[in-house]
Amino acid sequence: MWQHHERDVWPTPTADCRSPLPRVACRVPIVTTRSVVLQTFPFSDTSKILRLLTLDHGPQSVMARGALRPRSRLSGVLEPFADGVATFYFKPDRDLHTLSDFDLTRERQALGRDLQRYAAASVLCELVLRLAPAERDEELYRLLVRGLDALLEAIPGSVPGVALAACWSLVDVLGFAPDLSGCSRCGDDLSERPGRLDVREGSLVCGNCLPGGGTLPRAELNALRRLASGDPVGAAPSSRQVRLLVDFIRHHAAEGLRIRSLDFLLAEEVR
Ligand SMILES: [Zn+2]
Image (cartoon, rainbow, N blue to C red; front, side, top):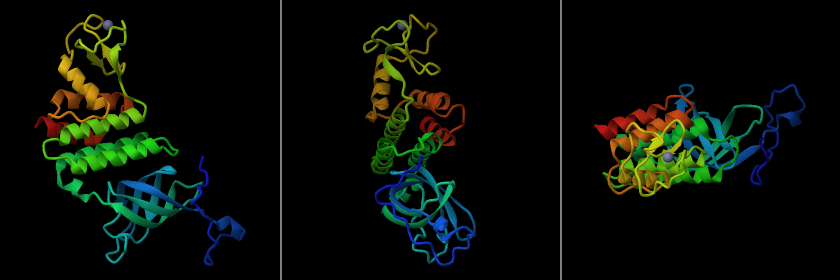
């Protein structure tokens, strides 16, 4: 349910309002909130639609009229992964609002110049697009911005580890993190023993309870614990670590939907 934010204001109806309703019905609240651009696509030769994660109002879609005109002050500003302060006319009964302004805080177009960074940033944004709650979620917003910054600043070679940690952090805040504390069936502590991540159950199982191989050596399991807590492992994560994340997100977080960007992450990592 949308609620007024203290910074939201109600403008005077414009003179060119053509609604047959009384003029008060034309009033549209203006919302100003920090936002990350998750996705953009052209709507016409001159306008584009943005999918945003806003800090105050969760995910929102806005139309940026004229943003594709070369002389627009928003030209080149409204690109994926950027964040800034968006101002838009909010229509509570609509899915698409009208962007009025975007005050850029940080553009991250450099992410597009590196396939691994771009793939990982796309995974973060796609997770948010598909799974973010409708209402304000400050922790999700903070982790998304932190993940994008970490990808931007990661030194070469550390990108896959940073990417996996950022993805696991989002999975955690979205409520889908696996339980890695012990065997989910017998309760045994697995901090010093190998275990197997049961993707379906979203938890660890020991070799006694689920024979048949596929157990992660202790070092790999500890690396997974660190990644799942948002801590990038120093060395490049193994392709198995990447596949675990891919399988886990596909099974739990994406509810069977295909997260296209994950394929790039996997393809890049195992290449
Ligand atoms: Zn067990």
